[in-house]
Image 1 (tube, rainbow, N blue to C red):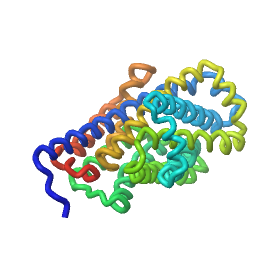
Image 2 (spheres, rainbow, N blue to C red; image 1 turned 90 degrees about the vertical axis):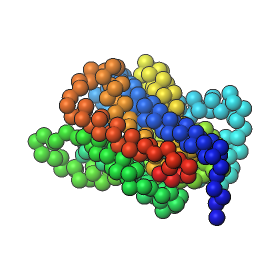
Image 3 (cartoon, helix red, strand yellow; image 1 turned 180 degrees about the vertical axis):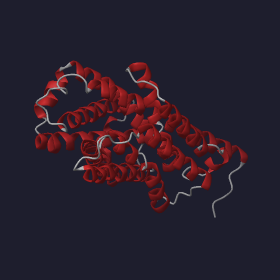
Length: 330
């Protein structure tokens, strides 16, 4: 039997997990900003070249984003004296498991996400991928033995509904011939991102989150650069973007994205997969906020209602501090 913690120990555990909740909320905020900044970069050359196939620009952007994020994270770990730990961890079983998780959450999931957008449209793809916290919670219950309360489930589902409301717009003129293929592609990131979270949380008992996410981003970049870029003919665009203004914007975006991913990994490690994933998809809410101030995004009743629903769902998930006594239970 697990010994009952003393009141002082309870307070330390709750404080630790509350920091995890804060990291989860910040991961959503930074990812919302990341999406807005990356969208701005995608409106610049060379990504707007008319000669490019529709899927080349976003895949090149994702490759550059993950590569520069890996650079930022490497600099962070080097500055804190953990540079050697990156290479040492790569030679261990936990490090290799993170590499596998990176394939699921990086090139595989992102490629499915972008192909889903191409064939089914942004609204449907965003709405489908927003269910990944629910799937991640189920995987966490199976593999990590997390227990999820009814209230937390209601909060998770509420967040998903809010994300759907924010992203959904009805199709005009019927669906494309490849619409249902796009729906199938959109399911890939839903599975990939949820499994990435569960697998990475499992190994973070043995790896520091900053090391794990560094390996994750570096692995994703290498696969993009060596496999995806040659396949789609994106190497020339990649080189051009590095020297363009859009490359400088993505450099900043990658810093924001690396902070988001670092906070997401910390949150999953400190307060559980279900809570962290639910707080992470508040990026739909933060995307509205940053989009309003940084772009010409117009606020609509649908956006406002969706944002309110997401906020209510997040509050339901984190409402009871006593549940934080078990770090991986909600």
